[in-house]
Image (cartoon, rainbow, N blue to C red):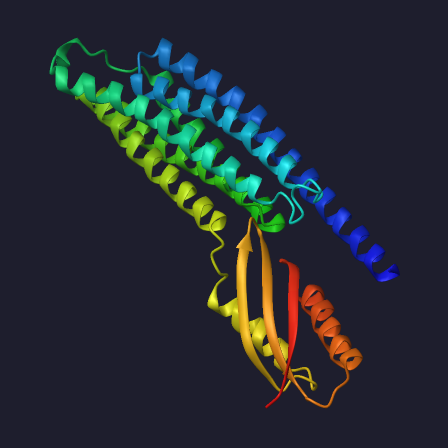
Length: 305
């Protein structure tokens, strides 16, 4: 019983660290995105750049997206309860799916408006963006790329799918700002339609990022097995136990950002039930200790033939 208390305490500290890091990263990026979206909106209006205004809308959507990430991570960190005995990790995947949808809808609005301007064909009426829009685009590229690497670092550190999705949202915004920069530069060089073409390219980048986030979240929602390398590591680790004569079955499934393992091992048929149970318990504890992402293991002992 004492062992269970120690394990529970260790898991609680891990979850607290997980939530603390995610909240810190999210708060910093929210403040950054609010300031950046205001700068880009101001520059887009003053410098008459539709691409920069579209980019400002994209940055503003990042604020909502990050709030969704915070809520998802907070819900995913809740302790198991009677109705959810396996925990709430998949709620982080739900947050990532919502994030991908918001990202795609935002991009679709930008793409539709740009396409309408291109199809209208009255290019001479389009205003040439001012230098302020060009400066804002450069500031945006540097800022959003910095947010991407910052968020990505902590997403990998705490293994958060939703936080990684938010990182790619920042990267997509950096790409969109590159598109805006090219469009604004082209318009200033005498091709006004380039500003609208840039907005359309921005949509393509946003749509690609939304699809990647959605696919990754869905994969985690449908009990996909973990990668072959991880399964091989678990297999080889269990076989190092001198009491294990073989492995009849090894199955894994990803639940949110955690791994569940079902394994059937072969042991000497002459072992008593108590001895077989002791071997299974030892393997269970050793796997949890050496594979931090494994949350639950079911070990079944078969008599060796």
